[in-house]
Image (cartoon, rainbow, N blue to C red; front, side, top):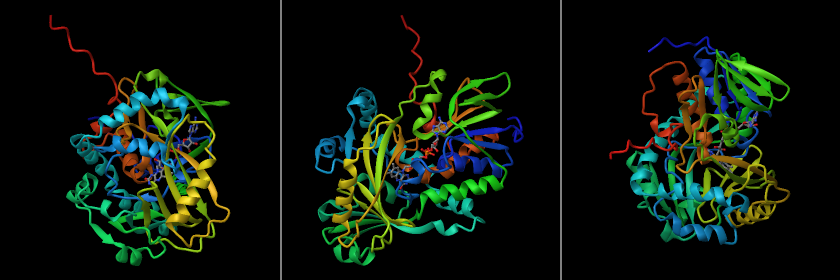
Length: 426
Ligand SMILES: Cc1cc2nc3c(=O)[nH]c(=O)nc-3n(C[C@H](O)[C@H](O)[C@H](O)COP(=O)(O)OP(=O)(O)OC[C@H]3O[C@@H](n4cnc5c(N)ncnc54)[C@H](O)[C@@H]3O)c2cc1C
């Protein structure tokens, strides 16, 4: 293997949490980095998430039997799932791929790949935050999955079995114990599964700003520009931006849900959907939530953040630039009020973000074949906050020619490409 070329410059396109963690892992290795984003670092999708950082979020979205629940989610009153007519045609292959993943053997394989990148999330964030003065942004937490119908809370579901087999500490609790752990939660919740040993970020937006400041201190050059295209040069890459062209020896595409737009010339199949999600945040909530709490029926996660109580979730497949669906604000407020009776719900702020989602719940990580120096790091779906530090580190390892300590084929940029046709046997 050639010696690591740490003098070669790297442009990280996109300063969401994935781009920022990638930049930090490169800077740690002495690689010169420029980070290009049209907006402020960390203030898109990475700003409004639910803040869960979990080594145990290792269960993909598609599970056995899920197809039976989809009509209920599409048509129930709260509509946690929706599909915009303009993406219905694209959803057919994506949905077929998604449902195909929901077999136990596939779930287990994806889970193994997820555990490699979610597993070290807490330690890696602690390392990135070290010395910033903002170490308290990350708090210890459990993840409480709360059920109104107590009979539905059980540890025999595949997702909980997988977590337990991999070493998670999980407890099934009844209503009395649940009200000791989360006194503000409505008494309607009869039972919960408590997953221990996790963390939560108290302000995902401030985390982005703090990590960007650290990257600047380590020498990163942040460029505010809209990227419109990339082009291979004899040596390195040209990055076309509105009003200027930038250059770098290597590129890492970390543009979240916007990434496929730059890959049209590569012949890769990139079935990425913008799976939009929402939050409402109550700045004067009058209550404190001790952990990350999922209302399993309503498909939302609630957490006390620096800015108040945030309730985040829902899955809306829609064109990336469609305006937010304003009806969701009232729905989320109603869900929040039903889950936490004493919550003050005056003047909520309302936000929409775009999860970059592949059908198999895994990101695309690695170098594009036949495009030397073009690396991908996007598609982290529901798990981007927790997967960002390890996936950034893996890309830095690849760029610096280091041996990665586990198999990365499961995240391959080519995994959705048609296999070459078999030679004709006749
Ligand atoms: C409601 C909700 C709740 C969630 N909760 C959690 C959670 O609790 N835990 C968890 O781990 N994950 C969670 N997620 C998922 C997580 O937020 C995402 O996976 C993650 O933020 C994706 O990060 P990113 O850096 O890939 O994308 P982004 O944060 O979207 O960053 C992409 C960046 O690219 C820039 N960009 C795009 N196009 C261009 C261009 N042409 N030129 C220049 N710049 C460009 C954007 O400005 C942006 O800064 C949640 C998501 C949602 C929506």
